[in-house]
Length: 374
Image 1 (cartoon, helix red, strand yellow):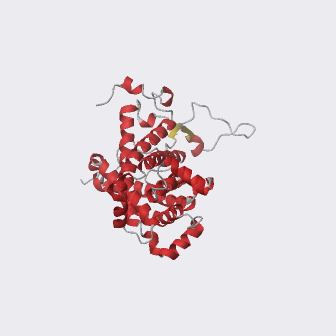
Image 2 (tube, one colour):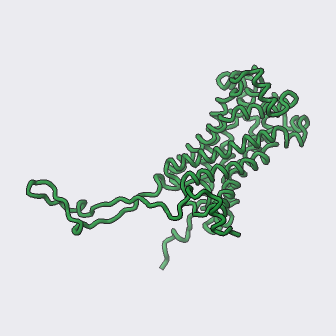
Image 3 (cartoon, one colour):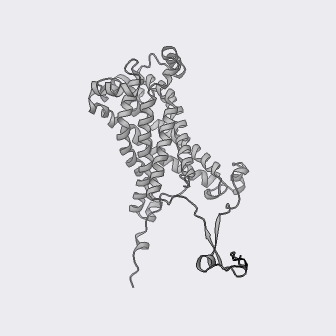
């Protein structure tokens, strides 16, 4: 049930929204000057027509710089995903480094504070960003596939379902679209993730990507870079399904119950704030759902020849589900909120609307496009 208008309005600072739509820019054209020669005065200069004799018409300025669901739209979403995932994952490298070491060596890295203390003592401040290069490259490639293909598959599945079913089963479309996108995106991420974990959890293995990748291939073979692909899918696909479906639902609920005006009448700062808030809450759910597989990925990429059975035997089911979880909730919540904020900020920059707050992508109505039969 919707909240009363006044009670909902009090939840949001009044300066962030307006009660009426923003004025739209227009362009004015003089039709006569485009179709007939201009008259001249006695000096041979063009004369200015009077307003009464001018036939003018108004052409509305385009609302957006990029047409929705065009190749340019998908290219913009892909580039936004690169910025969103690459920059945020690189920024939280210190947290990721401590988390991975807590998963691999809990006796040495007992908690968050002691983990940072051990790293600082043994490796210095520079050690906090060990593995930043494979992180940047791997998650930039993953972000391109994750966001770009999500927008593509969401539209594709909506068209297959038809307008009525697309609106009725929108959550299923979010889930299917995000799972399909992540399946592809992880193929790009997996090699860099393998090198990153080995560099971060085995001191002395390599300084970074440039020497770590050749050493890894020499030790494990090229196919060894994909040894953790199935566990990576097990971590990332549930994570991404939760990330996109819960984000879309949370943002829609915020605009429905907490925001006093329609989304298209809200200011851009407010819309980006909603994107960050929805992303943060979605990130907490993502961390819990995907954490057991995250422990598996760290274990397999750290130990040569290790199997899933070895991981379960050593860590136990409870350890798989809880080891390093508080830190990962903090990291993934912040990470996911920042990703949605950056992604939508880029979309706004290129003239696209922010994500969420409505139904799934408009489906093509075959009946509407079919020629009428007389």
